[in-house]
Image (cartoon, rainbow, N blue to C red; front, top):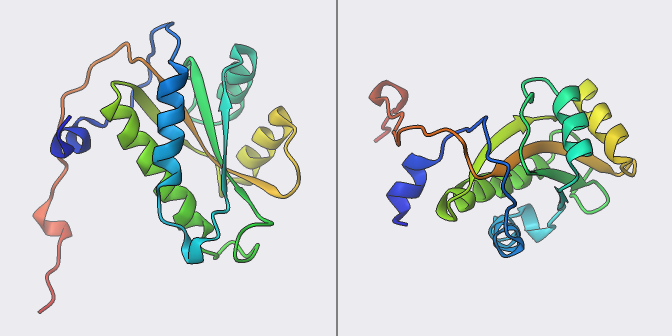
Length: 169
């Protein structure tokens, strides 16, 4: 797929086919994610690929705006022992976001659909994910991503608005 097609075809999909995602595609998504930049190359971002339907349902019920059932859910998290610091203003937010965007675009390139569900910084969402997955205290759930073969189609589009761009000379 051409780069422009990937960018414009990436859309949030909330309905999925009951179809398994190939392990080879999941591996490719992890490679895309880990190709993202990381502040001073600390690489604090870790990933949990969730294939268990019961766990996906618990996470979907417990996290706002996530009443979606998909064959796969990926938790993008931060291992605070590997970050520059545990300060919420640290760069791990950018590190994790770069990984997320690579997953979203990579999935589109592979013919998969995604929906990004915010978790951090909402403490109640963070706590729910930690509880459901029984995560170590050093693991900060950053975001959840539904992944699968979409059961809805959305048109490719750009959201360009010239009023949001300022050129400084």
